[in-house]
Image (cartoon, rainbow, N blue to C red):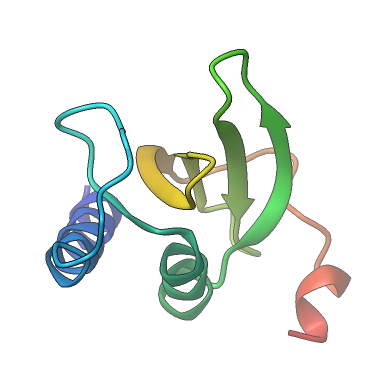
Length: 104
């Protein structure tokens, strides 16, 4: 639960910083921010890196990030670069290979 709250607070603070920019059409009620900032925060706060992504029929890219200890975050990114939080948690299996984190 603490991880969820940290991610939510980080997303909300990013969203407040982005209010001055033009808003992309995203689902109402989801915490969203600029993709580059989301990725940077996931790396710095949780040590997560991208494990996979896919293009949904709606045109958004669904992305999965995971950390070396099994934490994970899933978000959707619009064509305009806005990323919206979908889910996060612990215990992602199989955990990402450790060698993928060594050079980062």
